Length: 305
Image (cartoon, rainbow, N blue to C red):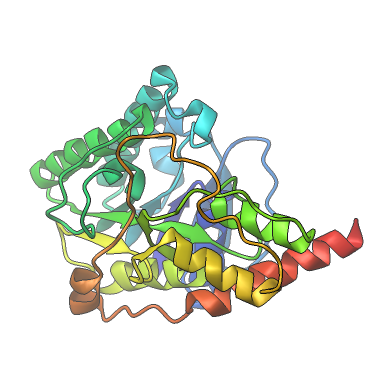
């Protein structure tokens, strides 16, 4: 892999991926939305401001020897927008245009990201055989796009790989979820109020996600669906108890204090056997190590307030 394009290059995964590509001496075309800022400079980095809805108007602006396109642009990811059908449908159309663009400039391989949101009620570790069970328009749109692009790639003789990415966490990311809620409560010396947290989940540190994406770029096989995660697949309560132990085990921990608000519990587990076999990827960052980085960064931010 010598040249790559990354859409959504100033998004969370995109910016980390661009950094890693540059560290690996890969010439990178980073596509960002017009008016966005991008602070990285590098002789092998080309920053292109573009509305991806118009990407087919820019075919002549790119070389025809790109090895890989990582497509990470997607709007409407925030929870309050995941059921906005108009936004999610526009993502499908934009992504299909990116496929047409890649074919026009003779890109060799395309990697699209999915998420465990597409399979929240599957009930088993996710792999290529997982049966979709989305609970919102965002997940449904991702599933529809996966099958549309797979068919489109097959008919146009271009390599297409789809990924299912578990719950990402990082020191430079803040999410509205039980992990960050618990950390913030405990750092303030307060008791978090929680359900029994019996649903099984997988969390993966951003460094491992990027390692996996690079490994798929180099060695991933055409037509495959790869799950990306750490592979712990623990009940959520396990993660919370680790956080509790790292911050202050003397503080009260409210596991079981509040009832569930749903009849069927979701799950987010992954089966890494396919990606490990094909690419050699093995996650490097245990949850205890990664979440300690998150806790330390939150402490630092609190002290600077």
